[in-house]
Amino acid sequence: MKNNFKLKYAPHFGSFAHSAGKDPIDQLHYIADLGFKAIEDSGFVSPLVQFNSTRMGIGMCSQTPEMLTKIGETLAKLDMEMGTFVITPTKWPPVELVTSGKPEYLAEFLNKCKSAVEVAKRLNAKFVTITLDCFDRSLPIEIQTANAIDALRRASDLFEPIGVTMAIETLSDHHELFLRTSTQAYMICKAVNRNACKILFDMYHLQKNEGRLIYHIDMVWSEIGYFQIGDEPGRFEPGTGEINYKNIFKHIYNKSKADNKDFILGMEHYNSIEGIEGEKALLEAYVQADNF
Image (tube, rainbow, N blue to C red; front, side, top):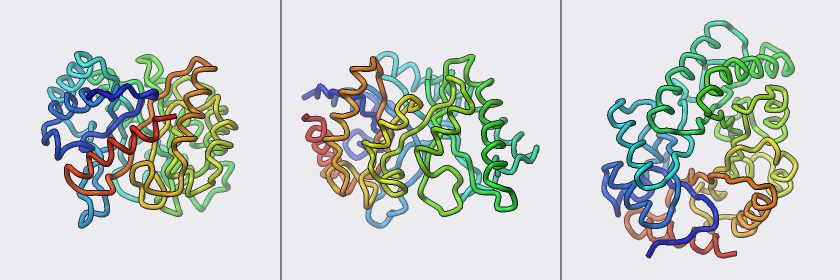
């Protein structure tokens, strides 16, 4: 039965791979049949490989032009949207220090953005995930922030003409990552002052870094461009951890209606149970959380 979700939840390639098979096009058809209106792709594998081998995406920036075009055409036929895809760092934690202001790092960042422009065109994607790398501990925080703002303004020149928004992501995976809170992201987006630069409000990371999710959603609302989901602890589907997603989804829904906004909410998390049973549990988790 096709579900009529109130919000635009976006599974990843791989979220339903046991049920739909490995082929990305088959997965798109399966996800559309479940009632989802969007898909996203972070292109990385769960670190809990022995427990859960769910793959978060296929890595759009590494796909052939032919595959990207095929995915884009399939999305159009299914009346689905492409959510965000990721410009992945070369190493983890990243070493391309945008915060350093060094010309060679800035050039590498902008070259990645240029490649992402071509990917976005083929997918008809409107969002790309951007991370701001690590602290440069040799510089004051204010100088690092200014360097990040400058890099994002230059990248906006690349993405804005094709209608793509950089979703700058707050992260919690490593203590040296620069962008960590929603208020920090808000300050940077206000300073960049471009339609192509908005906050990726990742609720999993922000629950770890700052908590009070509804409070912070309201505080930085005007600069949010995209949401991502994941319960804490574990980074699994809603209902497996401490976050009351039903209340949060209701809040986002009501606030979006009042402001005439239409967000994609990316399901950037793992399945808590392996296999087809886990995919059934994943779907049921969203049916329940959307029942407000």
